[in-house]
Image (tube, helix red, strand yellow):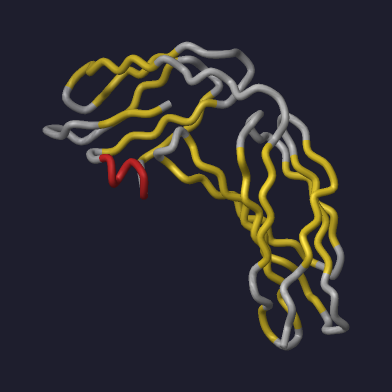
Length: 163
């Protein structure tokens, strides 16, 4: 039986998490697959996937949000197959940024101008869909460091927007 890898949180800050991966077996490990999950505004679950080569590893994941719960899952790729999953949870330190205040205005039948308030020098995600279910599961999206963006949409549809 292949055991799951051990994920150890080495450190964390407002915008990063460092963790180590190791196996407690003599089975040859070729690498790991790591998923980092977090929930955005209780509507949208985000995920970042890392594919890591080698047996032992210390990783740092940056560009995270302060005071946000993250789930890290990992499995090892071994000479005998994939291991079971391991999970750890960690909450970044600091104060979570205030949610931006969004205004969306139709320019014409296929373009919407979105503008919002919020801190400078950060990356914003714009998510939009025609239903709450689509907004949660598979929204259209883009990113920008600006405080506005023009979004192209299909005509004759109503859209929900989230920044």
